Picture 1 (cartoon, rainbow, N blue to C red):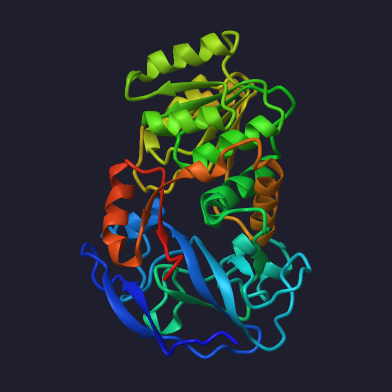
Picture 2: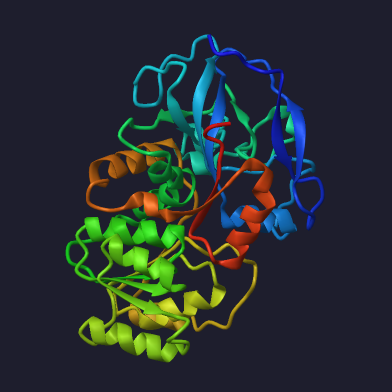
Length: 369
């Protein structure tokens, strides 16, 4: 039997705009169907940076334990919790990942059958310390309603951790979009984790050419390793008109059939509409800002563009992303997305590195604690 301590260390957001504080917090009792995990690795997301600064539109009560993209090893299973969503048996020592918490009872869950429409959805990384529902900690509690999936044994933590946010988001968005049609040319706007995963999905989905537009060079280098055919560095090609000209030259002068926005910069939306070919499709998944930009709606009707917005994902997308990684891991260096590793006590340094754009995916690495 694994010995479980009464308390553990966790990084708390106690005041917006201030550094996180390492505190000792209580480990809750495991309820029937609940799970207690030891956090192996927790990814740092751009959302964590915005949350720490207080920039998010919705501000959650403080203090809380941030961290919503986590991989944990089971140390205790509550009564009745015996399998994951794929029907595989669960045991102490298994590595798992988990989705956010859906109520399973509202219109969105039961009629629309879309957990993203759940009226009472709650999110890991935004709860008070007593709940221990955040990844920036030594242990994390998984609630009875939470759906979980085992991480394939073949995958390293570095390969799998991106599923916790960026990769499952891209998988869910492409599903809503209807995927890539055979030999369509695709432009990916943004070379962060979401853009990188969006690029490799397009490559494996049968795209003709995949062009990644973003920066810095290290991210574009990884995009090429993950199968992108061309990259355009916005630090070097600063003028959107010149970037459009390069894209047109690579797509027979017509523009791409598909543009996928993963940049999160409001101006990227107008640039994407401008470069897409007539009858093209635009998948928008990076936009979260309330900032407004000038835009000519006539471009949408004039070009006959289909625009699909998507954000978030549910447990099937975690499962499919993990299976993709397992099946393609010998073809692409998926673990290279983790560029910086920090101890829990170095969480503020990790957030700073993420904010600077220096890292692709910094992580809190608890292995060996």
